[in-house]
Length: 161
Image 1 (cartoon, rainbow, N blue to C red):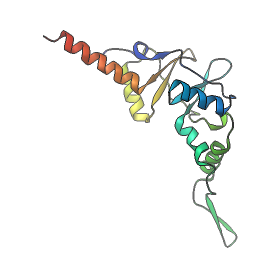
Image 2: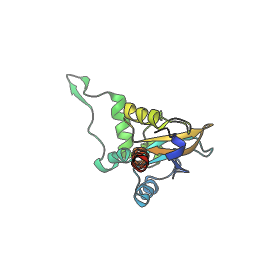
Image 3: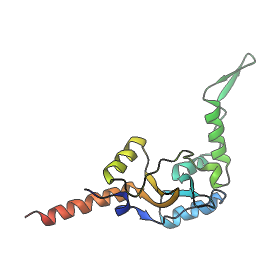
């Protein structure tokens, strides 16, 4: 399978602006039956990813405080920064407030499918935004890789006597 990301990625993926409402994002995800949206700013640069898992905080509500008071002392049960992040996700109203991936893992169009698949596996991500010269040009999903594998095996069967 000597294909590159450019051969199998979805070009011009559906995107959303960081200041868009969560309602708009939810409608896009449901309407297009996709599990995540690249978030791009006015300049077309990737600033994050909004995934279904980011939206789960909205459905579950605000988490309970992550500390207890004992003898006038605060004992943290969780990292306070993590609690604050979870609270913002639960109460957020815009894509920026809820999206994950402040450090988004990306790839380029000329990357091999094998390397991209390894990267997705190692980083435990479901999708890889594809960038060229700082701009989003596509998205590679696990489904794209599986379809490329199926095409490869189909071609192999046709050429084998």
